[in-house]
Length: 250
Image 1 (cartoon, rainbow, N blue to C red):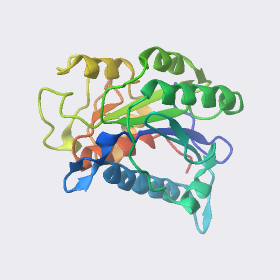
Image 2 (image 1 turned 180 degrees about the vertical axis):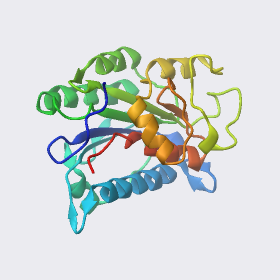
Image 3 (image 1 turned 90 degrees about the vertical axis):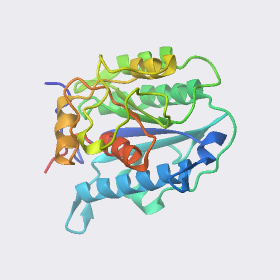
Image 4 (image 1 turned 135 degrees about the vertical axis):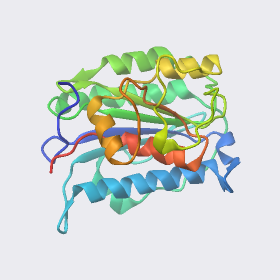
């Protein structure tokens, strides 16, 4: 079965975060800037990763993390790929919002990183790319790049792409309780062409991830896309929980 390789110190899971820091991320949601809500959710997720990696006083290196911020340019926040214990010691950086949304450029950076690292990760969990944005791209169409990325892979399966889109223009029906939401399916009514594009740019959730999400209290159904409308703090948090839901060794 694909996507069943356990994350361990011998086979760490690579998670790449691609975070939109365009100007619209400074707008407010639930009394806070969107960028601050994202950083809080990411910080909580990294802390949960550390918890999943800790035995006694030792942090097992079960996760590898890379982190890009992007606007009109792409910024490598961690200076490459780091183990989770290094990221935990550095803490989540403070990000400042900028201008445009060059989504194609960040996915080109992700593609380049994967080309360099995948040969050494052949027997590890398939890498996951967690892309968070709140607006349509302003550069070239990123979809062909994401299709190339999702065609890459290792013995565990193809690279996974998850999209967290902070927008009210995705779903026709509101989500009242994220814990009961079944996820975006093939028959889900999407409001815009860009929402449909993001669906094509998103992987389907592997069953192993779905089981881990269920253990975290979520009701994502089989076949759902790894795509969330992060228009509330709870949905943003749910998206980051999904990003770390690869199964781990006990």
